[in-house]
Each structure stands twice: as C-alpha cells, then as structure tokens.
Length: 608
Image 1 (cartoon, one colour):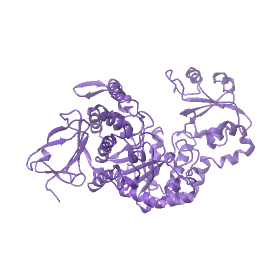
Image 2 (cartoon, one colour; image 1 turned 60 degrees about the vertical axis):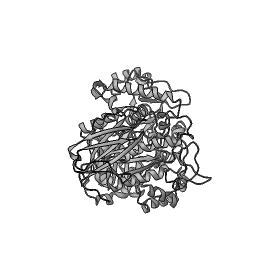
Image 3 (spheres, rainbow, N blue to C red; image 1 turned 180 degrees about the vertical axis):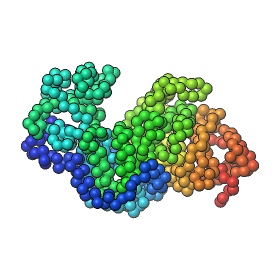
Image 4 (cartoon, one colour; image 1 turned 45 degrees about the vertical axis):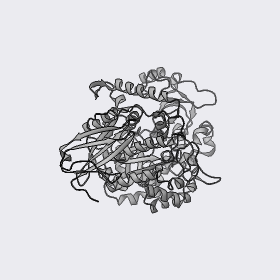
C-alpha cells in the first residue's frame, strides 16, 4: 500500500502527525519487541561462534517452499485458512517434509514495510492454528529475515522527513541546495527520479557519493527525491541507494545500527512469537550484518541459512548454519539440456579444491525469477583458467560457451515459459505436447530431484514442483490446477507412480541412511560425457557411497576401480537389491539406462 501511495503520504504526513506514522514503522516496532524479550534473552547462553550445520540438519534437512502469493483460495477464505487442513499437513509429513518455508509471510514480503504478519494472508488466530498444525506434524517453520532493501513504508517516509534516527536506516544523503542543479528534474506527480551516471560523477567529485556508478548501466543505483519539507520545517532533497526501481537499501553500518536493530528484533518476533526455527537471509545483505545476525539466531536457539552473491569463495566465507547452493542449478540444467555433465563435475571438483563441506549446502528446486544459467562462479572469475575436458579455459570464455550451447538447444524445442523446473525439463527434452509426453517430463524432473536428494546437505523443493507446474500461477495443493502435469495431493497419494509418492520413497531412503550427513570424497572422470559420478563417505560407518546420474538419452556403462571397494557388496539403496559385484574385487561396473540415476552403497556385509 505504502509503495503505491508514497506521493500522497509525503504530502499528507503532517495531517496525521509523524508520531502516528512512527508507531507503524519497523524501527518503532523493533524497540517494542526488544523491550518485550530483553529478560528472556538475558537468560540464554552465549552463541556458538561456528556454524551449527549438523544440528540444523538434524532439525530439518528436507524443506518445502510455499510462496503465499501463489496459494489458491476459495471464496472468502483466507490464505492461512486454506492451509488449515489436517489432511494437507498429513500429506506433507507423509512425503517426508521436515520444514516449511513460507515465502512472503511478513508485511511487504521481499520489500518489508513491517515486522508483523501480512494481514493479506489471514488473522493472528489463523496463524496460531497453522503453527500448531506444523508443530503436531513435526514440521519446522522457516521465514525470511529483513532483506537488503525495504518498501517505501513509514520508515522511509520518516527518514525523508529527517525524523529522529530514521535517516540512519538507509543510504540516504542530503544534497545541499546550492547543488540541487546536479539532481534530475522530478516529473509532475512523482516524488523520485533516477540520477544519471554522469551526474553521479559530479556528485562524487563534490564528496557526496562513493564511486558506485557505471557508465554501462542505463539506470544508476541512486534515486533523487523531490523537495521534501522536514519535521524541522527545512526543505531538503536527498539521494539514496536503491534496489529494483525504487526500493531503498538498508545501511547496515550506520552509526545508529538501525538496520541491525530492526533485523534482530524481526528475528526475535519470528522465533519467540511466530515459532519459526530457521531464518533465511538475502544474498545482498552485507557480510558484517550476516555474521551478526547468524550469531543472533544461534543466541536465541534458532538457525540461519544464507544466500550469497558471488562464487565458491563467498560460499566458503558464509557465516550461516547452511548456505544456499547457487552454483550447481545452472550446471545441472546444462547437463540435462546438453547431455553433458562436465560443467557439473567441474563445480563439484571446485568444492573439493576449496574445501567446501557440501553438507552445509541447501540444494533447491523451485521456480526461477530469471533465467537460471547465470554461472556465478565464472562471472566472479572471468580471467581465471578452469580445467574443462582437456583444455584450460577462462571463466568468461567457458560461460559464453555454455550459454551458447544451452540457447541453441532450447531454441530447437520452441518457446516455452522457463520459470519452473518442470518447464525446463520439457524444453530440455524438446517436448511441445505436454500431455502426450507428461511421463517423460516427470521422469526427467524426478531425476533432478533424485540428484539433490541423494547427496549431503539440505534439500528444498516447491509447491510448483509438487504439482508439476509449467509456469508460475496459483497453486491449489488439494484441488484442481490448470497447466500442471501432476494432480493434486489426494489424487497423487492414490497413484504409487505419482511424483509425490516417488519423492516420498527417495526421502525415506535419505533418512534411513542419513545421506544428508555424508561427505564428498571424489568426483572421478567418466567415459561418458553425460554421466556424473559423485563418491561420498557415509557418516558413522565410513562406507563408500556412489551417486551416479546419466543425463543422456542413451544407456551408459562405467567401470570404477577403487581399493575401498575391495571386500564389499554393492547395494542399490533405492531398490534395496544388490548390484552385480564380486565381493573380493575392487572393481565395479555401473549400468545406467537413459535419464536415470543410482545410489549405491558398498558395505563389507549384506544386511537384509
């Protein structure tokens, strides 16, 4: 509401008073929340200084993502009300889901304007019932922390009016009246305009802004405001750092530390009031803020998962208990599209070289907001040379080659909305008739899920995955959905070959063998370019486990020889049957049908 009405509010704020607006602000709410829980927090022990990955995985290593903006409702029912179904929660528990990530739960969603529940989704009473369902089914709740930018809510309006500590919440710079000539003209009826990069150069020379501008960007990171009358009666013009078109960025290192205060109080409210156990943090939040907030989560008995900007080095430096895997999705998609797993092998070899413990990673299947193949590692290291097949190639050259291969193959299949993994699978297989080839798409989709489920770390999939959505839209988990490959949950639970029940089988194997806690040992070379082989060491027993995926459209055979395989039997964990192998031999022949995967455990004795 505030984003759309900011011109009106800026003009009319004096009519209803800054104090009244202050009570609606996040900074004010943060102070009230901090007072409420001060004594309770004082009783807690100092937080562990290192990430608590094992404990977080023990709590929940399988997540389900539900975007509240996409939840379908019937009639006058609220979104929370539509989720108050014991049958729905029992289905989720049966599948093996251990955590529910409710995206957009709090006011303003990604661009927050408040610390409370967004009233669009329902009432406080309905939320308490929903949280009780989750607790009864043993499903932990996951929520978003404060992002790197907010909406244009009360906090930003008060900042522009130079009220109290509010200007310190944002990267907000007052421009002296003598320099207003350097600022852009504001269109009639608007309050903001983007600052051209040429003008930013001049503002930089005058000491207003650091050198954060680029001549290659059509639009700069800075917006300028119209003349705004402050609470002291002085008219000011400001410039501020923004995300998207106009969302103001939080200043995490301002003297008042207002951003950290708001974010920490938000976590307090989420953990103590809403009952959330895990907080997810935006990639763009500054590193120092992430470190502080990770400690704060552990201080009050919760966990954090962090998105990171950049490549493997950034993942290694992350302070969260889990780190979102932003590197393998592009390589996984490329392996499916091009029938070539070499780029995916390269990413996992880099994990080993940089000593990234892959059980710290949260692997996600969920809709994309943009084209997935950004190849972050190669963007961050454009001049570094990587070993790709038999050549040494720079990151930039390799990225362009992979993008070209993907684009050429996708174009052959015709235009398909590329925003869900199901849609990507259809495009990768060149399928245009979705209904006729629904089973082929489902098999490829399940193969990608299998790849993430059967390796260390946490795994997250979305409602779009569960119903096989081909593009973004409303989702009804318990009823009919248009443009989806899979049926609703009640129908899927009647079909043993459905996506939901096949996922349940895989997740059961994952739990039985504690695959989430295994350790990546090696990424061997394979004869077939379309085959990926990851070798893990199992927790506790130390047994060797193979995860093998054939992304090709033809069968493949691989022979692996390792001393550790001598005096072992090979057990296919998904089927429970033994694979052909001589007990004394250190060699193992792996047969993989087209678009298939196997997870094989090698143990000294076969147990029924």
